[in-house]
Image (cartoon, rainbow, N blue to C red):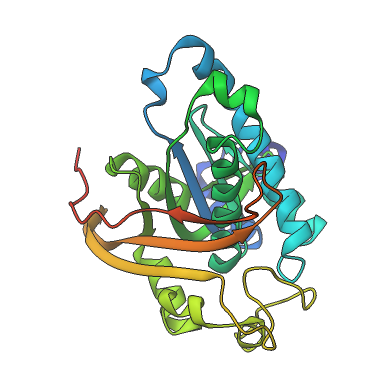
Length: 286
């Protein structure tokens, strides 16, 4: 939606036309609303960083985001295309100490988290961007994933799942990977639960209703003929609830470990990345 489109509907002095304006705006909004999964990432103790690492962090996040989308095109062409990457990249909401980024479904959102953490791990372990790592130090982050209707206003993304995501990140102080109840339910309905994605292959994902794949190539969700799985650990825990208006929604903590394979500085070219943790302490209400 644009400012001009909205003005043409509600910039009316005649109060008797309120119902007509509301109807027109409702029709416009319905055309603009899309369902998206939001990934939120927040850097731990950003406010306590010294001046140099704090000022370098936005650059560091840009490098990580750029590398992650490049990896997704190279290693996950079944799930990602240049067009999808552009849509997500153009809609990123930067916060200084993190960002929010939309995806068309939770599986693609999960893949983004895996490759983002993979790139972050390669920097933290001095296998990439060694000079930047020495200036910024080791980076720890927390993740959150929400899902719901969003819309664009003046090419910027808005909607309830972004607000909910920010709330989840603010509640966690233990660098976990938090999921909203709607994300939990999406995996329950489409993949028999999120833990099951560690045991499914590309052929299984093709069976998900209205799920579009672009090719038969994926590093994480390997083809049927490959005799192993990339996921090493997938543990889901309900750790609390979140107030949403007059209701509450369950909050889940996910711990993922995935076997990755990239060019490394040392001879061992395999490594396991972890997202979240198994801390069962409840979320912190403010």
